[in-house]
Image (tube, rainbow, N blue to C red; front, side, top):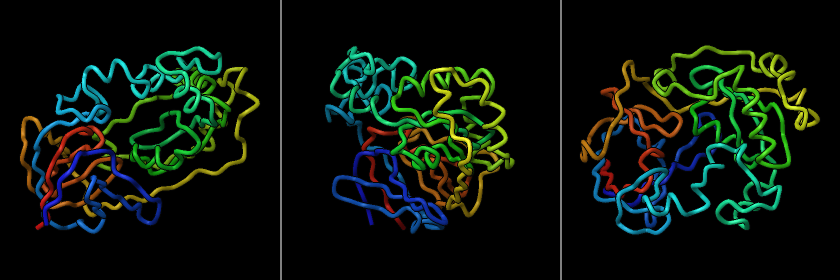
Length: 264
Protein backbone atom coordinates (compact mmCIF):
# COMPACT_ATOMS: atom_id res chain seq x y z
CA UNK A 1 0.00 0.00 0.00
CA UNK A 2 1.19 3.52 -0.85
CA UNK A 3 -0.09 6.62 0.93
CA UNK A 4 0.61 10.21 -0.05
CA UNK A 5 0.05 13.55 1.63
CA UNK A 6 1.41 16.56 3.47
CA UNK A 7 2.98 15.90 6.86
CA UNK A 8 1.42 17.42 9.96
CA UNK A 9 2.07 16.29 13.50
CA UNK A 10 0.64 12.89 14.32
CA UNK A 11 -2.66 12.79 16.17
CA UNK A 12 -2.54 10.87 19.43
CA UNK A 13 -4.87 9.06 21.78
CA UNK A 14 -3.75 8.32 25.32
CA UNK A 15 -3.83 4.65 26.19
CA UNK A 16 -1.63 1.72 27.18
CA UNK A 17 0.20 2.27 24.95
CA UNK A 18 -0.49 5.64 23.32
CA UNK A 19 -2.08 5.35 19.86
CA UNK A 20 -0.62 7.35 16.96
CA UNK A 21 -2.31 8.38 13.71
CA UNK A 22 -0.87 10.01 10.60
CA UNK A 23 -3.56 11.97 8.80
CA UNK A 24 -3.41 13.07 5.14
CA UNK A 25 -6.17 14.70 3.10
CA UNK A 26 -7.28 11.38 1.64
CA UNK A 27 -5.53 8.81 3.84
CA UNK A 28 -5.47 7.85 7.51
CA UNK A 29 -2.78 5.59 8.96
CA UNK A 30 -2.82 3.91 12.36
CA UNK A 31 0.91 3.99 13.00
CA UNK A 32 0.81 1.45 15.85
CA UNK A 33 -0.33 -1.16 13.33
CA UNK A 34 2.86 -0.57 11.32
CA UNK A 35 5.21 -1.61 14.14
CA UNK A 36 7.66 -4.32 13.01
CA UNK A 37 6.78 -3.66 9.37
CA UNK A 38 9.07 -2.31 6.65
CA UNK A 39 8.02 1.12 5.44
CA UNK A 40 9.59 3.55 2.99
CA UNK A 41 9.36 7.34 3.05
CA UNK A 42 9.82 9.36 -0.13
CA UNK A 43 10.01 13.19 -0.12
CA UNK A 44 8.03 14.68 -3.01
CA UNK A 45 7.78 18.45 -2.50
CA UNK A 46 7.04 21.25 -0.04
CA UNK A 47 3.61 22.66 0.76
CA UNK A 48 3.15 25.53 3.23
CA UNK A 49 0.68 24.69 6.00
CA UNK A 50 -0.95 28.12 5.68
CA UNK A 51 -0.94 29.28 2.06
CA UNK A 52 -0.69 25.74 0.59
CA UNK A 53 1.77 26.97 -2.04
CA UNK A 54 4.67 24.81 -3.16
CA UNK A 55 7.28 26.95 -1.40
CA UNK A 56 10.28 25.95 0.68
CA UNK A 57 9.41 25.56 4.35
CA UNK A 58 11.10 28.09 6.61
CA UNK A 59 9.94 27.15 10.13
CA UNK A 60 7.05 25.33 11.85
CA UNK A 61 5.67 24.11 8.52
CA UNK A 62 5.27 27.63 7.08
CA UNK A 63 6.98 29.32 4.16
CA UNK A 64 9.10 32.43 4.82
CA UNK A 65 6.35 34.95 4.04
CA UNK A 66 3.67 33.21 6.11
CA UNK A 67 5.98 32.69 9.08
CA UNK A 68 6.50 36.44 9.44
CA UNK A 69 2.87 37.42 8.82
CA UNK A 70 0.39 34.98 10.35
CA UNK A 71 -0.63 34.99 14.05
CA UNK A 72 0.00 31.24 14.34
CA UNK A 73 3.76 31.93 14.12
CA UNK A 74 4.05 35.09 16.22
CA UNK A 75 6.73 35.31 18.92
CA UNK A 76 4.22 34.75 21.75
CA UNK A 77 3.68 31.18 20.51
CA UNK A 78 7.20 30.20 21.59
CA UNK A 79 7.52 32.89 24.29
CA UNK A 80 4.12 33.04 26.03
CA UNK A 81 5.28 35.83 28.35
CA UNK A 82 5.02 38.13 25.29
CA UNK A 83 1.24 37.60 25.11
CA UNK A 84 -0.76 40.85 25.09
CA UNK A 85 -4.36 39.90 24.35
CA UNK A 86 -5.27 40.29 28.06
CA UNK A 87 -4.42 43.98 27.58
CA UNK A 88 -6.44 44.25 24.36
CA UNK A 89 -3.22 44.81 22.40
CA UNK A 90 -2.85 43.24 18.96
CA UNK A 91 0.43 41.64 17.90
CA UNK A 92 -0.66 40.28 14.50
CA UNK A 93 -4.40 39.51 14.68
CA UNK A 94 -6.27 40.34 17.86
CA UNK A 95 -9.28 38.07 17.28
CA UNK A 96 -7.03 35.04 16.91
CA UNK A 97 -4.85 36.09 19.83
CA UNK A 98 -7.86 36.53 22.10
CA UNK A 99 -9.14 33.09 21.13
CA UNK A 100 -5.87 31.35 21.95
CA UNK A 101 -4.39 33.44 24.75
CA UNK A 102 -7.50 34.13 26.84
CA UNK A 103 -8.26 30.57 27.83
CA UNK A 104 -7.00 28.38 30.69
CA UNK A 105 -3.30 27.55 30.48
CA UNK A 106 -1.20 25.18 32.53
CA UNK A 107 2.42 25.41 33.63
CA UNK A 108 3.71 21.88 34.12
CA UNK A 109 6.71 19.71 34.85
CA UNK A 110 7.47 16.90 32.41
CA UNK A 111 10.16 14.23 32.48
CA UNK A 112 11.26 13.43 28.93
CA UNK A 113 15.05 13.39 29.24
CA UNK A 114 15.15 15.15 32.61
CA UNK A 115 12.69 17.33 34.51
CA UNK A 116 11.65 20.40 32.52
CA UNK A 117 9.07 23.17 32.86
CA UNK A 118 6.63 24.02 30.09
CA UNK A 119 3.41 25.81 29.15
CA UNK A 120 0.36 24.59 27.26
CA UNK A 121 -3.33 25.29 26.94
CA UNK A 122 -5.34 23.19 29.37
CA UNK A 123 -7.17 21.64 26.41
CA UNK A 124 -3.84 20.26 25.16
CA UNK A 125 -3.20 18.02 28.17
CA UNK A 126 -1.98 15.27 27.88
CA UNK A 127 -1.33 15.80 24.14
CA UNK A 128 1.49 18.25 24.81
CA UNK A 129 3.23 15.77 27.12
CA UNK A 130 2.86 12.97 24.58
CA UNK A 131 4.35 15.14 21.83
CA UNK A 132 7.37 15.83 24.04
CA UNK A 133 7.92 12.15 24.78
CA UNK A 134 7.39 12.61 28.52
CA UNK A 135 6.87 9.38 30.46
CA UNK A 136 5.59 11.37 33.48
CA UNK A 137 4.23 14.88 34.02
CA UNK A 138 2.39 17.03 36.56
CA UNK A 139 0.66 20.41 36.55
CA UNK A 140 2.02 23.23 38.73
CA UNK A 141 -0.45 26.07 38.13
CA UNK A 142 -3.59 26.54 36.07
CA UNK A 143 -4.08 30.19 35.11
CA UNK A 144 -6.77 32.01 33.08
CA UNK A 145 -4.52 33.30 30.29
CA UNK A 146 -1.29 32.66 28.41
CA UNK A 147 0.54 35.70 29.81
CA UNK A 148 0.34 34.49 33.41
CA UNK A 149 1.54 31.05 32.33
CA UNK A 150 4.42 32.67 30.45
CA UNK A 151 5.74 34.78 33.31
CA UNK A 152 5.46 31.74 35.61
CA UNK A 153 7.51 29.63 33.21
CA UNK A 154 10.15 32.38 32.95
CA UNK A 155 10.42 32.54 36.74
CA UNK A 156 10.70 28.76 37.13
CA UNK A 157 13.17 28.10 34.33
CA UNK A 158 15.82 29.86 36.40
CA UNK A 159 15.58 26.83 38.68
CA UNK A 160 14.70 23.96 36.31
CA UNK A 161 15.38 23.35 32.61
CA UNK A 162 12.91 24.28 29.87
CA UNK A 163 14.60 22.07 27.25
CA UNK A 164 14.36 18.41 26.23
CA UNK A 165 17.40 16.41 25.14
CA UNK A 166 15.82 14.58 22.20
CA UNK A 167 18.57 11.99 21.98
CA UNK A 168 18.28 11.02 25.65
CA UNK A 169 14.48 10.96 25.32
CA UNK A 170 14.62 8.58 22.37
CA UNK A 171 17.26 6.34 23.94
CA UNK A 172 14.99 6.17 27.00
CA UNK A 173 18.04 7.23 29.00
CA UNK A 174 15.94 8.65 31.82
CA UNK A 175 15.03 8.03 35.43
CA UNK A 176 11.80 8.37 37.33
CA UNK A 177 11.41 11.51 39.42
CA UNK A 178 9.03 12.49 42.19
CA UNK A 179 7.39 15.35 40.32
CA UNK A 180 5.14 16.26 43.27
CA UNK A 181 8.28 16.98 45.28
CA UNK A 182 9.70 19.05 42.44
CA UNK A 183 6.43 21.01 42.23
CA UNK A 184 6.43 21.74 45.95
CA UNK A 185 10.08 22.83 45.90
CA UNK A 186 9.38 25.25 43.04
CA UNK A 187 6.27 26.77 44.61
CA UNK A 188 8.17 29.60 46.28
CA UNK A 189 9.46 30.82 42.91
CA UNK A 190 6.00 31.30 41.37
CA UNK A 191 5.34 35.01 40.63
CA UNK A 192 2.92 36.75 42.98
CA UNK A 193 0.34 37.23 40.19
CA UNK A 194 0.04 33.45 39.73
CA UNK A 195 0.41 32.14 43.30
CA UNK A 196 -3.33 31.80 43.88
CA UNK A 197 -3.48 29.32 40.98
CA UNK A 198 -0.98 26.84 42.46
CA UNK A 199 -2.16 23.20 42.22
CA UNK A 200 -1.24 21.50 45.46
CA UNK A 201 -2.94 18.11 45.48
CA UNK A 202 -2.96 16.81 41.90
CA UNK A 203 -1.07 13.62 41.03
CA UNK A 204 1.43 13.01 38.25
CA UNK A 205 0.35 11.42 34.98
CA UNK A 206 2.28 8.45 33.59
CA UNK A 207 2.47 7.75 29.86
CA UNK A 208 3.35 4.58 27.96
CA UNK A 209 4.79 4.77 24.44
CA UNK A 210 4.60 2.03 21.76
CA UNK A 211 8.30 1.18 21.46
CA UNK A 212 9.62 -2.32 20.73
CA UNK A 213 13.28 -1.27 20.61
CA UNK A 214 14.91 2.00 21.65
CA UNK A 215 17.82 3.30 19.54
CA UNK A 216 21.24 3.11 21.16
CA UNK A 217 22.63 5.89 18.98
CA UNK A 218 19.76 7.78 17.31
CA UNK A 219 20.50 9.51 14.03
CA UNK A 220 17.99 11.91 12.56
CA UNK A 221 16.58 11.43 9.06
CA UNK A 222 16.86 14.61 6.96
CA UNK A 223 14.44 14.31 4.06
CA UNK A 224 16.12 17.07 2.07
CA UNK A 225 19.53 15.41 2.20
CA UNK A 226 18.10 11.89 2.00
CA UNK A 227 14.75 12.12 0.15
CA UNK A 228 14.22 8.35 0.23
CA UNK A 229 14.47 6.09 3.27
CA UNK A 230 13.41 2.51 4.03
CA UNK A 231 13.46 0.72 7.36
CA UNK A 232 11.53 -1.40 9.86
CA UNK A 233 9.46 0.65 12.29
CA UNK A 234 10.36 -0.29 15.87
CA UNK A 235 8.68 2.42 17.91
CA UNK A 236 7.01 5.79 18.24
CA UNK A 237 7.83 8.30 20.97
CA UNK A 238 7.06 11.98 21.10
CA UNK A 239 6.58 12.86 17.44
CA UNK A 240 9.40 10.56 16.35
CA UNK A 241 9.29 7.35 14.33
CA UNK A 242 12.06 4.95 15.46
CA UNK A 243 13.55 2.46 13.00
CA UNK A 244 15.59 -0.71 13.37
CA UNK A 245 18.88 0.86 12.23
CA UNK A 246 18.62 3.63 14.88
CA UNK A 247 17.31 6.15 12.32
CA UNK A 248 14.67 8.43 13.83
CA UNK A 249 12.25 10.67 11.94
CA UNK A 250 10.70 13.76 13.52
CA UNK A 251 7.26 14.01 11.94
CA UNK A 252 6.46 17.40 13.47
CA UNK A 253 9.87 18.74 12.48
CA UNK A 254 8.99 17.95 8.85
CA UNK A 255 5.54 19.51 8.71
CA UNK A 256 4.86 20.98 5.29
CA UNK A 257 6.71 18.20 3.45
CA UNK A 258 4.61 16.22 1.01
CA UNK A 259 5.67 12.57 1.12
CA UNK A 260 4.63 9.14 0.01
CA UNK A 261 4.75 6.20 2.43
CA UNK A 262 4.85 2.62 1.20
CA UNK A 263 4.07 -0.24 3.59
CA UNK A 264 5.62 -3.61 2.72
